[in-house]
Length: 316
Ligand SMILES: NC(=O)c1ccc[n+]([C@@H]2O[C@H](COP(=O)([O-])OP(=O)(O)OC[C@H]3O[C@@H](n4cnc5c(N)ncnc54)[C@H](OP(=O)(O)O)[C@@H]3O)[C@@H](O)[C@H]2O)c1
Image (cartoon, rainbow, N blue to C red; front, side, top):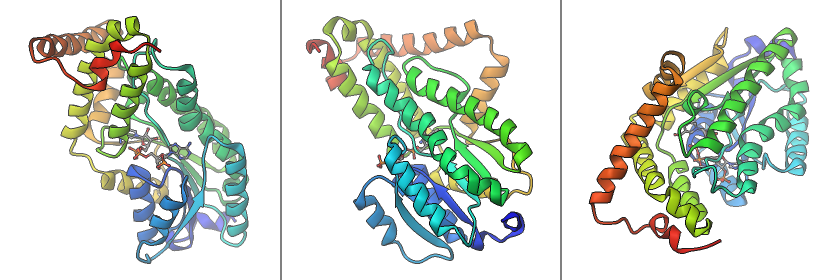
C-alpha cells in the first residue's frame, strides 16, 4: 500500500478519535469535506447519528463506535476499520480523544487520575497497537493531539498536565521507533480553544470539591476557585477556533514532510517559550503571584456561591 503517499486526499482513509464534540468533530467534518474518508470515533449512538445526518461531503464521514478506555471497543473498531480499508489502505490515525480533570492533586479521586491517563495516553497507544500494521503498510502517519499544557504544568491541572507530558513523551519515542518503518508521527499542541471541554472542566471540578473531605476543600478552595476563574477567562479570551485546529490537522496530513510539532494559537507558543526560557522558580513565582492577586481580589468581593465555594461544607 506504499502508493498512498502520493495519493490525493480523496482516496485516503483516516481515523480520528473523539469526533463527537469540539476539536475532533470540527476536524472530522473538515477532513471529510476536503475529500478524506474519515472513520470518526464516537461513544454514543446519538453522536453517531448526528455525524451520519450531516450533508454529504466530497469525502466520507463514517461514525465508528470507539471508547479508547475499553479494550473490546478498540478491538471491534480496529477490526471494522481493517476490513473497510482492505482495498484502500489506512493513511492516518489522529489520537484526539481526551478529558481534562482540573482539581488540586490531593483532592482528585485516584480513579479519575487513571481515567485521565487512560483516555488521553494509554488509549491512544492501545488503538495504535491495533492499527499500526495498516499504517506501516501504507507508509502513513500518526497525529497525536496534546496541548500547550504538555510544556508547562500549572497548579490544579496536574493530572491533565501529567497526561499531556506523557503523550508528548510517547509521541517522541514512537516517532523515533516508527521513522525507520516509514511511518511519521506528529504532535499537535493546541492552546486554549473554546469547546465543550471547558464546561466539563468546571463540572468535574465542582463534583470533585463537593466530594472532598471538608478540611481539604477548605485548604484549597479559595486558590482553586481563583484558578478556575483565571482559566475560564483564558478560554473565553482565546481567538483560536476549532477551524484553526482542523486546518492544522489537514496540513499535518498532507505535508510532504510533516513537522514534529504543530502549534495552534499564540498561547501554545507562549508555553514553549516559558518552558525553554523561564527558570522553574521564576515560573512558580509568576503562577503564584497571579493566583494570589485573584484570590485576594475575590476575598474582598461577595463570597462566591458556587458548588466549589460550598465544597467545604460537605464531607466525603
Ligand atoms: N479545547 C482546548 O482548549 C484544548 C487545548 C489543548 C488541547 N486540547 C485537546 O484536544 C482534544 C479534544 O478536546 P476538545 O476541546 O475538543 O474537548 P471535547 O469537546 O470535550 O471533546 C472531547 C472528545 O473526546 C471524547 N472522549 C472522551 N473520553 C473518551 C473515551 N474514553 N473514548 C473515546 N472518546 C472519548 C469525547 O466523547 P464524548 O462526547 O462521548 O464524551 C469527545 O468527542 C483533547 O485531547 C484535549 O486534551 C484541547
